[in-house]
Image 1: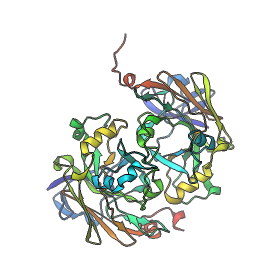
Image 2: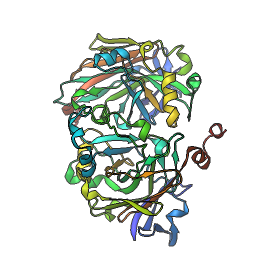
Image 3: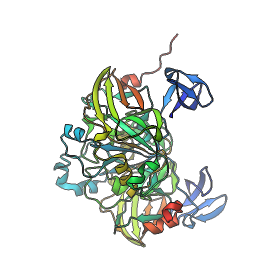
Image 4: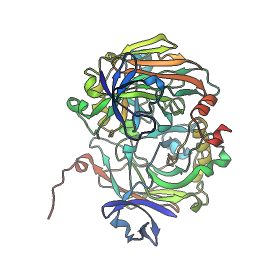
Length: 269
Length: 257
């Protein structure tokens, strides 16, 4: 059994549970539950920071473009962005496909969850700041250019499913050696590993906290692998990370999503 | 009304302006320099605009954008009035940016321009510092330039929406060590407040206490350690900030008599 922290519907505090990653089951107070029964909420509370171009294959795919306009040179510092609060959504929540869009891009990411204030942290002590790890689906509208902040592509409502839980840091002995697999409608569409990160977990924490403080509950995504799968309305996306279970969400039309998630009355009219 | 969040007497209080002083909601009155000023709202999502004044875009040799150039900031970067902002030792060009900040009042999506002010609850002054040495062309302006700890002072006051007759006709200026170094007017924004609210809410939900920093006019000059930087907007007040070295920021407390 693997120790994890989850957020039940209707409770303010989080709960510690034992999970079985292979089946997405968990044990709480001696009873066995299925994460896919839908009682789990977003397990984190802070700001979500994403990292781009941190997989070797992703950077390599940019090729000579890195040296040409508008980029002019390969990146020096981590390439970061923010997934704001409107994007966050839990395990099993629908991902809204905006009107006028046909396809979305899946971003399978390992999320580092912080347990205390992290400022100018050194690599050697980086993991002391980590509460655990979670699975994040950093969804985007497909876009080629990363010259300007991709708010319109990445900050849409419901574009950051996260969960089902935070796996306790002690349970993940090698965060830089985790297989990541993505299934769309039960078909394997992407396979990669955090072995292929340019900055590994500790290095990323050092380089990011050099200039910005991360706080308790904040999440830093280590990156998304090259060749992100594309999905369309009705597709079920399942992201597995080794030893952590699976995050499952389905793409639905924007209209259907707003009905399902009980948005404001004005919006439903 | 001008409202504030301040710390005094060992607790955090809501307060408002009262004859040039700070009156806590419990009735106690303090001078402005007797309280610790906190950011006037606890921000949710923080939006900022690049190149939203034509003269500033020109100053940086850019064509004015055709769509708002929006980026996001984290809570680590926000500080209140009278606080200090860190300037790393080795940098050559760090500059202030005086900006009108719009504070959203309610959950909103698909807001039309003509209804935009219905979802605004007020305004404040912001100083959106940038360190140009760290500019890179990936998601530019990148977070190393724009999301540094202490690099976004806001305040001092939250000014109620209805106290500002026309937010699109306010003069802004920055004063460094007593010298006016930046002057402009919100009339010169490329994308107005209603434009920005319609644009952002067309693809994402805005929430109460989201803040939109609407960009800065021409006149962004460099600042150095020891500088006093005041950014002010007509009818809204003056936001004071001090530039401090990394070394002094981290200096251990040495006690005193």
